[in-house]
Image (cartoon, rainbow, N blue to C red; front, side, top):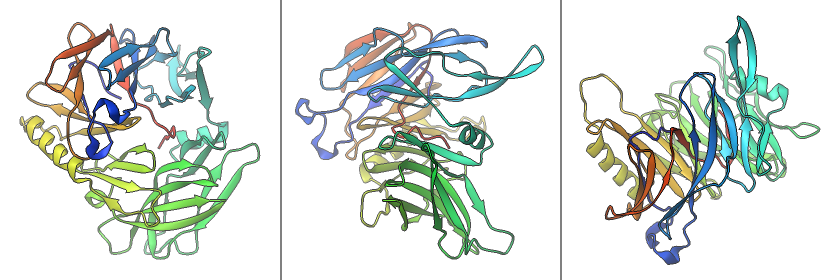
Length: 377
């Protein structure tokens, strides 16, 4: 989730070396703009913003897709563009008149918006940080796996199993034996169902200073552990924590150190961690151009999101004192970008910087990108 203020959004298509010509069939980029007064107890109204890269146009949905209460500690919105547009219903605890109450984040949806809510038991487990959860569209049900499993001191997890649950009418589970020699397993991403899905875990073993990633492939109710290689940065759950974007079968990862973007092809017979050369060359250049140590002590920070066929990479530009968000393809070309101005307009720009189209987003507090799996970790 990113603020619109002083936002520059540069988008490159994830279509390989074909570039962004009108014949490329680029999927439009879709975001949610949340409009309203930035004050506790108020509500934000959300509308869809669609950028057609081929036509060079920006459009704003005719009517709101949902409203939600604005509080200082509400969680980020998790949504999928569908169709239909689907948002995850979550709740926050607030003290009102000295009484702790659980408040729903989303207000009643319009007919064009679908709202999904976790089963009560799963919601409690996620809130207690015991489970991660996602939505299996093929089964129209939620899935979950444990956040982590830790062996006793000087012991391993040999002989134990990791349980993946499908929250259908009658809950189904797969208990898959953990690979021998591991003493720590953390679930970092999940997608799909027990019949056709996968779970990505980070593991560590005694005496090792480097974490490893495994893809647990789910096929017809059976689970298979497949090694993917060493985790980026020595461990993706270190530092600021991992961020994942799934585009088709490709799962992109920004690890804890925030300086490399990794990718796993989850459909490959032998999935391995790779570092797309074009993406990382551009990423390195962006870091050099945007981040200068100002002596403030603030750490370098980057955020990875995505929409349809593009990646969106947010960096803080210390010279401009503003966040810039880039979307990246494998060869690093730039077909155009979006730019917010101080009057509250969002502009569609071509690669040479000429303004093509704009939409008015008064009092826009946040822009967010979709999560195809409604993953919450």
